[in-house]
Every structure is written in C-alpha cells, then in structure tokens.
Image (cartoon, rainbow, N blue to C red; front, side):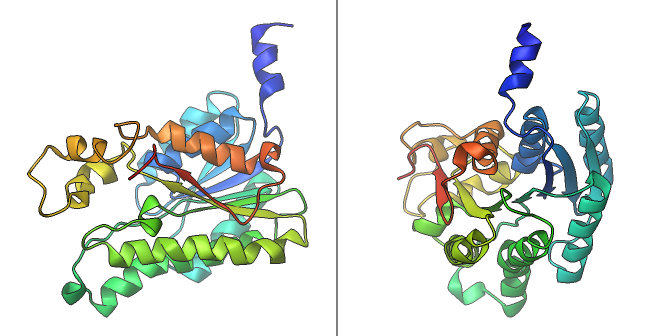
Amino acid sequence: MTSNDDARTCRRLPGRRALVTGGSRGIGAAVARRLAAEGASVAINYHSNAQVAEALAAEISATGATAVAIQADIADPEAVGTLVDESAERLGGLEILISNAGIEHFGALREITPADFDRVFSVNLRGQLFAAQHAARHVGAGGSIVLMSSVSASTQIFDHTLYASSKAGVSAMVRNLAPELGRRGIRVNAVAPGGTATDMATEFAHRYRHPDMPELPPETAMNTMNALRRLARPEEIAAAVAFLASDDASYVTGSTLAVDGGYF
C-alpha cells in the first residue's frame, strides 16, 4: 500500500457532506480545508466576499474534493434556511453542520445600544440556533452539528459583555439541544477557541488587555494570557472541529471543547 493509500485510509469523513458557515476566511476557511482533506464534500458559506469564497472552493476542488461557495447572511433566519437547503441540494445531502459565522464586539455597558445587541446576537446566537434548526431537517442518525462558542464565554474581559454573552448562549444551546437531537442519533457540540491568528485577532487583540496593564504589542499581550504563550493557528481550531464532526467523537455530545492553549 502506498503512502497516498495510507492517507486516504486514515481520512475520517469519506463521503460526508458538510456546510461551513462563515467559511471563506480565518477559522472557517481552515475548517473547510480540513474537512475536505478528511474526505468530506464542503459547502462554503460567505456573506459578502464572493471572490475569496470562490477561490477557496476552487483551491479545494483542485485537490479532488468537492467544494461549492454559497452566499447567505446568517443574521437572516430565512436566508439561513435557504442556505442549508441549497447546500444539501448541491452536495446531494448533509451530514455535518459547522456553524462558524460570528462577529466581534467591544463596548462598555454605557455604550451598548439595542442596535448593537441585535447585530451581535442575530449572528452569534440566533444565527447559530436557526442554522442548527434547519440543518436538523437534513442531518440524520450519525450526523454532527458543531457550533462556535469562545473562551470569552467563561472568562472576564473588559468591555466584552455583549460578545461574551452571545457566546455563552451557544454553550447553553448545545447542552440543551443534545438530549433532543440525541433521540435522533445526532450529536451537537461547540468549540471555544482562544486567541487565534486571524485578521479578526489582528484587529481586536489590543482590546483583550486589562486597561491597567502597561501597553504591549497586541500579540505579546495575548501571548501572556495562555499556558502555551502563543496564538492558535486556525488549523489547530479546525483539527478540533474535525474531531467533533467525526466518528472519533461518537460519544461526545452537549459539550463545549475549549481550544485555548490553557487560557488564564
């Protein structure tokens, strides 16, 4: 048996069909690549950057896997339903949902507006709920739904209340969906990444610093906040997602897996 044969034998998701929301960049793009490398066909959801999403789909397709790019605004529940249905149609079915789309927010209590609340929760919590709801219409026994929480859901960060609350809701969601979906043989879990080397981290890393701490380069400040003293690579988060999506996690449901480098 050749080494290529060995690699194919080790793939954990052969023949599976997966939708990755927010899949065109950052963690989502790494997840799409990893699932395809594991043997899955992948629908890559994007909000506005069609060029980037189509390029990623072409990159994955060039490896011999199946990948399609589909536009949808995750903040719109009707659009989410259409996205899931189109993904299932174009892939020929659906066994996996990776609900990755999310937006960041920092703001002191006195600054938060109802519009801020609606914007953050419509994507980070409501969008994930309805993605799971619509995916559950297609996913059958043995399927997996993975939502995206955050280390912020279980720690204290200045001016991060709105975002952290939305992500804490995700962890509560998977705990309570687990027994309902478990009756149908569907597992549902979440991943809670820590600081990850993405464009979002570059933009917001300085906001994770305690205001009384001395000024440090943003990445240096982030690196002092976890045991491994570095940001995660998107591929490391994707590896955890692929584990939860696969049969290697066949007895894991209702859980939030922290992938945070030992955040403290």
